[in-house]
Image (cartoon, rainbow, N blue to C red):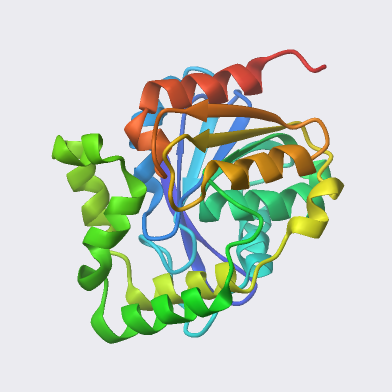
Length: 265
């Protein structure tokens, strides 16, 4: 295991961690809004059997810096490129969930030559209307993360999973509560201002879209929009809500491994 921080061109330090064999294909994981790289803990044992796994905390989250102001999907995408450049990595698989999947879409049309396979999980190319995000930004700035935690977790997990009060649920709650409100607001602004729907046909990378069949945050219709808009994209549906990798860790891992290790078409 290796961990550290790199500094981006605008002076933001990004925390990262590397697990797995040095000579294995690289799989880069990107976290959702309101979490951190630890959201992928349940995948690491299986992923490192096949990949050199790189996780990072997106700006405003985890151990990364929290710049002031609004962020953009372009800036979040360039953070990924600056990270892999700093680590000396040319090509890689990319798996992002929710906000991480929005970054993945940007990478798919902006720098397809850097990607081997692309996994877009529980995500969307457009999350309007902007007014809803403005309300969320105002709320988190005024009242902090604790005031919205229960409502967010209701959208992230099915009732049955929440009723179990598992250690996994407690860990995700802690990630959410530990997120800096400014980082949450900054990334919310990036989602608010994003519309990648016209750009989906430009994604030429082999792509897998993962959806939860009970996901109120990014409903299955959003996944179908991605799968139909990206040429040749495949779609895989899990019995889960929004954080499908936490609710269905084995099924999620199997889907990613199977897609990334399958022979090229």
